[in-house]
Structures are given as C-alpha cells and as structure tokens.
Length: 459
Image 1 (cartoon, rainbow, N blue to C red):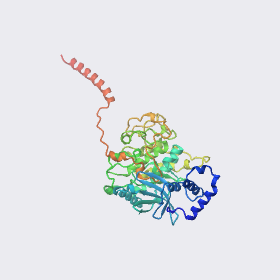
Image 2 (cartoon, one colour):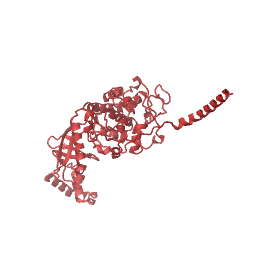
Image 3 (cartoon, rainbow, N blue to C red):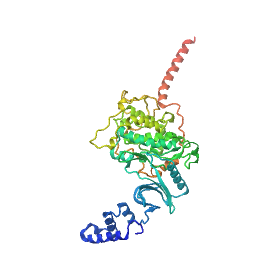
Image 4 (cartoon, one colour):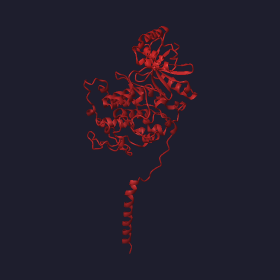
C-alpha cells in the first residue's frame, strides 16, 4: 500500500482470489505467502514482474516527482534508467537516475552538464530531453522513451548487417551528430550501444553523458584534458590530444560503429584497455571483407575514410558521412522488411571509388577491379592483427563491457581509460630490423668493392 501501486480494494481482490485457488495450485503451496500474492497480482495484471520483484525486495517508493517507475531499462556505473509514466499525462518516458550513493559534487556536476547538453539539442535522430528534477536528493533526467533495441543487441541477435541496412542506421546517427556538432557539442561516446533502433527503422543517438563543448568553451568542461569514452571506439586524436575536442573524434567512433555493424566485431578485439588504445593509434583493423565478403571496394573505401588515423585524411563532417552513405542508405533496409519481401538492389556497382586505401589489413578477398589485396598504399600500413581472432565464438571481439538502451555513460566507459591520460610517445625507430638485415650485407659488399677499386688505383 505504501508504494502507491495498489489500492486496498485491489489488494483485497487478489487475496480473495488467492484463497479461492486454495489447493488447486499445488506448486504455489511451496512458495511463501508473499510470493504467492505477488504472482497473483501479476496474473491479474495489477503489477508487472519488475514491480512485483521490487515489492518483494522491500522497495516502497516508485515515483520521482510526477513520474512513476514501471520497469527497469538498464543499470550503469553512473546510475540507472527506468521506463516510467507521468501520473497525469500518462506519457511513457525514460528516466535516468543519479542515485544518492553516486551524488558526489563531481558526479552531480557531470549529470547537470549532461542535462544542459541535452536541453540544447532538438533533432529527430537524437533522444530528446523532456524534463529534469530532484526528489529527496535524487537527481533525475527525463527523456523520450524509444521502443526497440540498440545496434549492439541487433547485431548480436541477427548477425552482421548488409551495407544497405548499416548505411540506413549510420546515416541517421550521423544526422543527429551533425546537429550536435552545429550546436557546439562533441558526443565522445558514439558506439553501437548508444544507437537506438525502433521497430520501424527510425534511429536515435542516445546518452550524452560524456558530451562536451567544442572550441573556446572546452576548457570549462569538467572532463577537459581527460580521455573519456569507450576503449573500442576511441579515436587516435582523442587519445593523443584529449584537450582539443573536435567533431573528428565522433566521425572516427561512428566509423568504428559502422565497422561493427557490417562485421559483428569491434575493430580491435581482445586485449586490455591499454592494448586497444595502442591499436587505435598504431594498427590497422582487419579488412572488413574478411568478415563480410559481401562488402565491396566503394563501401570499404568509405569505411576507411571514416576511420583514417589522421584527422586530415578522415571525412571531415557528419554531413559528408551522410552524403557518402547515400547510395546505400537510399535503398530499403533489409533488417526491417519481412523475410519474404524482396531486398533492395545493391548500389555499389554504380558507386565509383575516388581513390583506394590500405586503412585495413589485406583481406585476401579480391576487390572489384583490384588485385588480391584490393588496396593501394595511400595510407599508413601497420602490423597485422593475429588471424587467430578471426572465426572465434559468436560474441568474440564484441564489447568488453555490457550495454543497454539509454544506459548511463559510466556503464560502458572503462575507468581505465580515464586513468591512462595521454599515452607516452613511442620511441623513434630509425632502423627497422628488416632494413638492417638488408642494408648491412649490401654495405659490406660495397666496402669490399671500394677497397679493391682503391687498391687498383694505387701504384
């Protein structure tokens, strides 16, 4: 009764029904009386499973201000997200809660920064803020509720996407990013878990818990100069210069997200957080055609341009990402149509690549109009990732952290990333061992020949 979820009449009705059942339910007799009552309330539709479990665990408060919690969406390091309903409007919303145990001055400041960041944004491809408040020293943020799932769960359930389906999702996420960038914000945590997909294929980018200002306002950010985000999606320039946030950070992370969508694996699977950080700076990911042979040169070229190590070689804006994805995104999204419906034709045969790249490791799969590697050397070449990674278990190479729709920033953000700071510069290698092996014998032969020539000149 104290919870406000039930009236006395509803509780009495359930008790009467429970007594009437009596010995008809043999299995129920093995349950404590409270659990039997909770089960009956669920059966009659008075409570849902989550509410009944919370009541059995002793929870009595289910509201924050006018918002009544009806289910749990996800839990993270910085709080929990609930599905809720406004008590008057009956509007279903999502409520992100910063619990009392996390309400340190720094955490509250970061939470308020997220609230203010969301309040500046209004775009169909971004989760919209609706309200915010405090109830008994519990701070909360109310956003629109997005039905469906996130991109990470979608790929884990259905496998790697076709170029058309992935392009549709990523171009919509890019539209949301473009709006955020124009409003002077960098997201800093773009990843599949933060890309929400509704049943009808609409995409919303969520969780601006790590968003920060661009330009001259960056120094006012509480996280200024820190590496924040998720290790699997950090850009090299974010790692090397965390005090200089740019939209290029998000473009690289979006490229990594697209890589995951079409391969089912993160660009650099396995290893520690420090290993992933080094890989983003120094290594090339495995060519995505090795994991998804249906990808062709124009699509891989686009992906490479989003994931270029150097920002000057990377696609500059989210708007350009949308334009480059248009040949694929303009077709129906196969992941959302019925199995017996025809799939849209691939546009790749008409999309002419402007240049080639070795931003990825050789796939061993011939590209359209190319040699076995399919790529010319126009970008840096790096050591190869061990092939043992390829073909591992279903979830191999995905996330090292869990994710939920509308989850808090701390949920997937590895604390180790925050502690790394700016990684130490790598020592300059003047002579590669292979070069030494080649040059040393040649030099010795040259010296012998020079000595012989000089001896012939002398009387």
